Every structure is written in C-alpha cells, then in structure tokens.
Image (cartoon, rainbow, N blue to C red; front, top):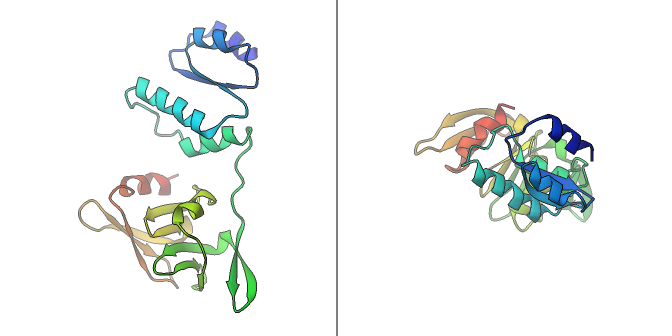
Length: 195
C-alpha cells in the first residue's frame, strides 16, 4: 500500500526485496524494481536466496554496511530483533551454576569444551560444535576466530599479524592467551572490531 505511493514519487534504480503478509501486491512489486516477494513469516532460506539474487545482480557491489545476519534475524523473527542467549548453565560437582553471557570472554573447543570468563575462570561446557554456540550469541559482541574459538570483543587486548595473511589475538589479562585468526576470518575481524 503506502510504499507504492513512495515508489510512484521516486525513481528507484536499486533492487527491492518486498516482505509483506499480503499476496495481492506481488505483481505491482515487480513493476517497481522488486527482485523478490517474501510473505511473512519470512523463512530464513527464502531471505538468503533473495539477498543472493540482489548480490548477483549487483555484481558483488553489495554495500559493506549491510549486516546480512541482522537482516535475516530481523525478518525471520517477525520484525523483532533476535534475542540471544543470556546465560549458560555449568554442571560441576553435581550442581548447576549459571554463567552470564556478558561475563564470558571465550569459548574454546579442544579435547574438552571450555568457557573462559573475564575473571579467568575455566568451565567445562557440553556442546557438540561451536556452530551451535555461535548461533545463540550476539554477533555484535562475539567473533568466531577459527574452528576452535569464539571471542568476546572486550576480551581482545590487541591483534597482530601472524604471517601468511593470518592474525593473532592477544587476550586480556588474567587469561593471557593467544588466539589464531584463520585466513578466512582475518579480513572480517577488523570490520567487526571497528563498528
């Protein structure tokens, strides 16, 4: 409805992804540069495909400022920002202890899986893959450095080159660890830190 009144007043050259609960505007949407028409509730896979269509048509000239994960979360959650995990429950010595996500500096997958807090505590935590942890963390605060580590922005002391296009994160005290950043993730780290 209202958006079409705007399109009548302005000539838009950019592709538009329409997200609506109404089917009746589909034909009109494609007449005003619509590249896809998604019905609510928007499915994550459909939104990904639509974004890929835009990217392909623009020859990869997709604005760097667009946070695709945010868009996917926003539209797949009915226009609400996604709620991320607030705490993790540690099972130790036959008791459960909550650890607030805001107190977690690192998730490390090794022979065992560990959560490290800003206070320097190390807890064993049961997860099968870091992917499942990454999905429940706020990507504004946590960064997947490599296959074995996810780090909180406030846990980073410094970053230095580590040869062969890799980087090394120096973790803040009291943890005093170094985390390798994979070659694939290295270009993303600076953008993520510079928000």
